[in-house]
Structure formats: structure tokens, C-alpha cells
Image (cartoon, rainbow, N blue to C red):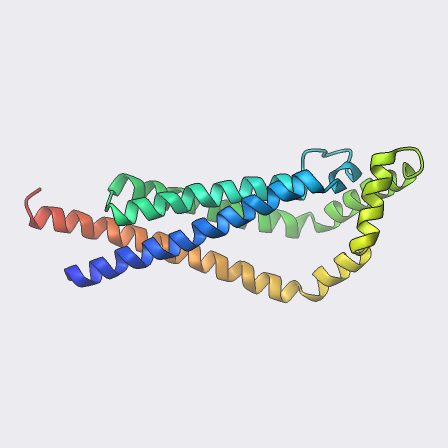
Length: 192
């Protein structure tokens, strides 16, 4: 691989990670917005901290850190940052696959648990003002059954998007390893 293809690989990896960093910023911002302006998490008393806002804040932060490592590792040609980027992407990919398998295996149990939590919170509709406000906001934006039917009707598209994200992660990992190996070869040929 010549120097020009090394530079191309370096800048492709940099710009894709810069794009992912901006996406992570948007996800983090949207998660913070949901934490401030959304009270739907009160409906699930069993898992009060597992709200969409918290999940988006965590995911956005992780994306920003990983993308930053990819950006800096590629533009500075730093082997340590590139390998950290690779390892974190590998961990995230393995976690995604594990989560997908667990969701598939425990789909019925999870659906039953969500339904029980929602039924329990609906029984507190008249006794708890925060629960009442949360249910009112759900009915304003569309009900649980409508969201569930949308998810089931678009399950194929969600699966395709998930597979595309996994492919992009594998490409990022392979680009990072290729750039890392080329940095080794270049430093050896220059006698560094």
C-alpha cells in the first residue's frame, strides 16, 4: 500500500469518525432534552433510571468518546489511539450482538414485564400527579399499542439498519487495523 492510499485511508477514517462524533453530540443533546422535558420514566417504577433520556445520554457519550479516539488516532497516526478505537468498537459490537440475542430470547418475558409495569402505573393514574402527567403525554403523542404496532410493522427495516451499523463498525475496525499496520511498515521503512 503506497503513501497516497495510506493518506486516503487516514482521511476517510478521520471524516467518518468526525461525522459519528457529530451524531453522538446530537444523540447526547436529544437525551439531555428528554431528561429535562420528559416524564415518561415515572411509568416504570421497577426501573426508574432506565428511561429513554438516560439511555440516549449514555449512548451519545460512548459514541463521542469512540469517535474522538478514531479521529485523533487516524489524523495523528497514533497507534495507541487506533488500537483503543479498535478495542472499544469490538466491545461495542460484541455487546450489540449479545443484546440482540438476549432481546430475541427474552422477547415474551420483556413484553410481559413492560405490560405489567404499564398496567401498574395506569392504576396509579388518579392517585399520583406525575403518573397522570406521564400518561397524558403518552396519549398526546400516541399510545403504547400504536408504538408497538409500528415497531412490529417496521421490524425488517430496524433489522436492516442494525445490520448496516454492524457492518460500518466492522469496516471501522478493519480500517483502524490497516492504518495501524501501515504506520508500523512506514516507521520501519523510515528506520524509526
